[in-house]
Length: 426
Ligand SMILES: *Cc1c(COP(=O)(O)O)cnc(C)c1O
Image (cartoon, rainbow, N blue to C red; front, side, top):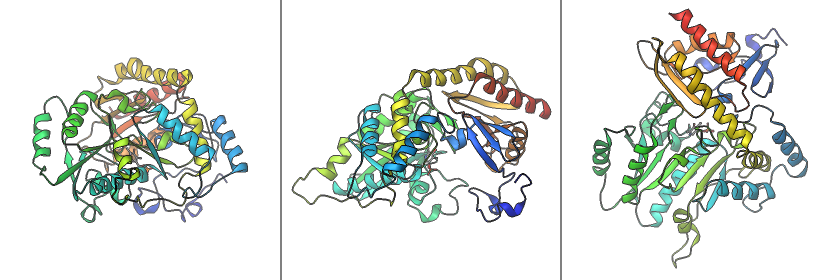
């Protein structure tokens, strides 16, 4: 079916899309490594890891095999009454990879891993006898599209229709070397004896909010400030986890230990949806230690909680993620951005705010306004797609975040097409 027409996809309601049909929908037939292949045989380099989920490359053979084996033995069983080998492997494995946590709660995706962390925070404080809870977030924060995740996010086009119906959050500026005193007084203005605080943040790189990057040093100071008041700290590492930022977790750049950590996206290597919320002793203890009072029940679960197929994929990720080949690949991508791409891009007039953390490079295409809905987004995407590169600019923010299997030739091609577009625009 190479002559794809409108009627072939008009029954599908596409996400984040005006009129339910996206611009340039492409009929994809196959994906392998860093490449996507459409029905006409055209190839695309997947320069954004299929919305940031694909870390090892498409159809990574060890995960294909793990899922095949698991599907024959045990595809799924209700987690409320049963557990299974792959759930144990994932829970123990992730707690080994990321010390400082005690328990793992399974859910379905990034948004639900955030919902779990938020609901647990609220219930934790209730169990401490505190009902007035203030949720703090950072500007540009994106924590997902479900209601709690939207509530905790910064106001944006993603949530503007619903924000008035969600719980209120307090939005803080991104911490930098100048604004900490101002942020501290804003936080203090919300403090009172009967109030508890929760702070949720994307460490180092904020994804959907425009690939904003900020320094660990100032984030650490802010976290420490919150800690003084026994606030609950939630790191949303849904995007940054699994070496995206150059370290295994973005929170590995921090000194401060958080209370909960959310994971999804790269967790299954881009095969299946799965969310994890890592929970520390302080939080889990309230739900597990009988202090004479009645124990709170965390009433949360999904039909597919702890799905064995998704866990079988995640178990491979956990096993392979610290291989030298992965670390070297991550280093190679970061080196390419630093040593080859940035020197060529940094002095171009159209490139603003060029930044890079680990495998992620981003910059603004200089137009008259910075805006997610800016039409240059479509123009850029069209150009890259025509040139065999899948990217999806966030408004006028162009970024690349390739799977770790990408080759230097492919990185070079991404850079060449970028430069070609600069030339065509100048
Ligand atoms: C993508 C993302 C989410 C939401 O994850 P979904 O799997 O899309 O629900 C939450 N937080 C961050 C930081 C994300 O990048």
